[in-house]
Image (cartoon, rainbow, N blue to C red):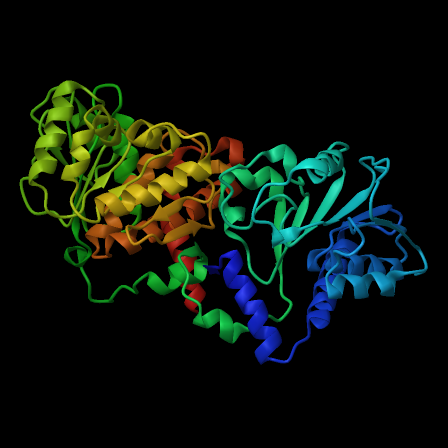
Length: 507
């Protein structure tokens, strides 16, 4: 799915009105009908409804919703903010006039002073103050109003975007000055802000409502942001030939493990094998030999010259994929070995976990990264590499900067794991689950990345496949064990099933 910026959606809206003969009032009615249908499906008419409407077309949407809800038997009190008396848009004024003396609706038009109504958690609040019309944080009286709306922890439905939240980036976000929605009903397209963890408690559950904005206009707009879904993964995955052999699916090597951390190597190996790699070698310190041979007999074992830790990273042949990091530790000898390897590496390499921590200990190694290498940090690893960040948005924006600067891919892990490309494009994953918040889950992902790259997928596509299928496997594991009970090994065990289910979408 393509994710449009706020300006993109405004452009689509204008095209729909100017080129397809749809009036603004028709669009407002479509929004109101869709929002009303969602409310009627979720809350009974016995629930008192308070509507806060701003002076623009988001307010017009809210006023139209109030009118339609009253026809379903809801008791409505509307507060329309028209500070100064002459600020309403043409459509908002028309919706106000239609609502005047409407049965079941009490309306207060706020022109100067305002007495805040008593709100309680039993009410349903419809937020139509500003939606996506803001380009700066709320201040003054409206910031106070929003704080009072949030106070009783009532159910809140925000139309398009919670008021106070900007639809794209929010570098100056103060959460108390944003409506905390229970449900956000996005008009036609989801917004970039929905995929950033900082905004989750503000957006609540979100759902897209289709009001028939121009699909032709949407096709013409180039975008930088995407949501990876099952249909995308289905399209990218290759069907296997009946006459293929393991030689057709590449050979990968994973440098993983050290004394006391061989489990990371095992999990990475299982992730790679379940993803279909043709041949897998695990190189680990000599102490890891019995662990790998007994736990993952399908993998070849290559002993590193170190007894207890990785002391040399020098592939003995040309592997189609090289992954480094799970459980290797950050001993000085390991840092030197990684630096020596990167200084001569020419092909993309996958760097995870302790490989990233080794680089953080010696940041000049960033300048040695081969083009289109894949770095897979969680928030802590990212901050160790690139400095502390106060929130997820600032971390994501920094990831865009460093991906471009070093010409690498950053897989920034989270619920909507973001695959950040050096061309500035961001692909958000849609298969995330809390079940993946378990030790070793990232090691499985590293193995999957190595597997897909060994099979000949370019790093950009291998990253998308691995991240999505990793999340899907986590969901399947949660069906068996519950989100609390999933272990990383369960995720690895479900990778093959995840691939099968996505491939079955072709049938």
